[in-house]
Length: 144
Figure (cartoon, rainbow, N blue to C red):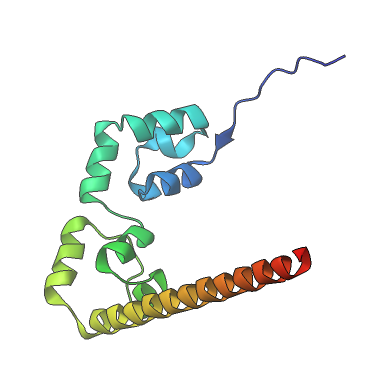
């Protein structure tokens, strides 16, 4: 006999929800920061963002991951560059305009990392194709 269990609503901490929404928790409304967010509420925020969420996404302050992405560098690169706090869109644009030496270095590093990641991925794909060919050849040999 199967028991009928009542489904429990999955909830998350505000920090988790803010991360999933791509916003800086400290800039969200107090009621968002103080409560728990259900999956349904998160989905509603993602599909039909309220004005405060639209404004945060547009103007910031943005979390470090978003800042790094908009600058084309890693979060570690932000730390090496001395950026420890959340930045607004205006501050990010100003950094782009200024284009300090550390930002240029970090962009170069990030480009090298992307090239290396692509090289390794292509190498693994090539090795996988060779392995599949060898397997197919071995199977054909056994079938004879």
